[in-house]
Image (spheres, rainbow, N blue to C red):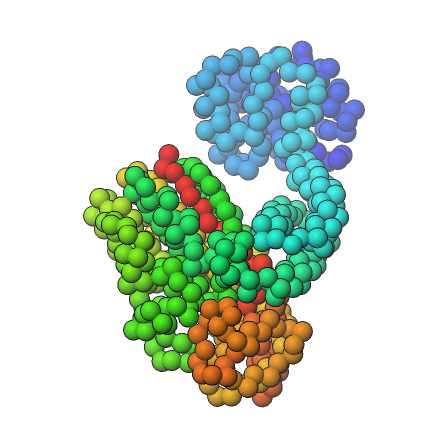
Length: 515
């Protein structure tokens, strides 16, 4: 701490001698200046860590000095000290990005606290965060072994994401590694829970979570009463990504509720998103809407009829609404909707599917530059955050707020960074997805998969009589024995979905009211 240099600027600096002696005893090096002009000369000659600046001085005022200080060194923290509690002075100072604001008379402890807050902040936060997580670690580990409900797993996943976001901002890589191992263990236990309980969720009157096919009826429909609503389904949005960009909505919306619901298996777009818009499980979609449903091995786009599915669901629910559906898969389409958004102002429901995050995860597999930019969950979140802040989607949301639209943000499934291969063998008609397979005569490692030998038990269509489904657990991905090493190195550390993990299955649903 010997090298922390403080510049204290006050025209009555002599009266502050006791404060200065107090700080020097705490090993801070204090330089004094009696005017704004003198202070500006000092910062030309010496590099300071922080400035304490009196607001009311003859000659250059505190606010004038502050403006010139910021011009010379924008990142230098300045603490404004004033006798006045006038609002405009506070606003001016805060607008000029001061680090802190103190009202005279100040005591030495206030000064010390301000120094610690501004200079020692990251270390103190890091120590406190580490200590809190260490305390929480044991509790999470204990909870993990005892959870036996879908609510319990959703709560635990929320806790893990909370600590992941807290720990990513500190420099303790050891703590982060412990959390990572805890996430791996959580997924191991979660897969056991899903294996045991998932089929029973489809029993009549079962205690089941809200899932893809019940989301619209249970959660979205009740929100449509009396308020025009913008429904945004961001493809492939994990809960941690939602938490990363949620703060950007604070200027236009306030959160009314946030819940987690469960994606159906496979956690893949053609299954989960079609289920949201149709309100049906895949086997029912195949039966009731054969013109709109394609199986994995069929040629053609698998999500071309979401509008028709939604129309049929609204009719089935007896809802007569003025609504529109928009799928955004490019910047051009996003901008077009943003430009024309006001033409939809009289609608009860505007449903938007936004594809960017899914495209991002697929690009990580195929493009070296995205592999570099999204090499970890932290950088993947950061990339999502940067996109959202500057996207047409943000423009659309701001317009919706101005028009008084309620906002619902959700997704069809999440994604997981796959690390470990698992060998699988199937015939030429086996589906190609890395996190689930469907086909006949599948050979696989039993311990690595959740298997549905009879797809009907989990309401999935069977391509033929002997077809089954297998889902990869945790961070595994399926690889064929031929050309195995090349395949593994190409897909390892890429984002995939379709299987069983907290990241893919436990996903966000948020309702926000316009400010």
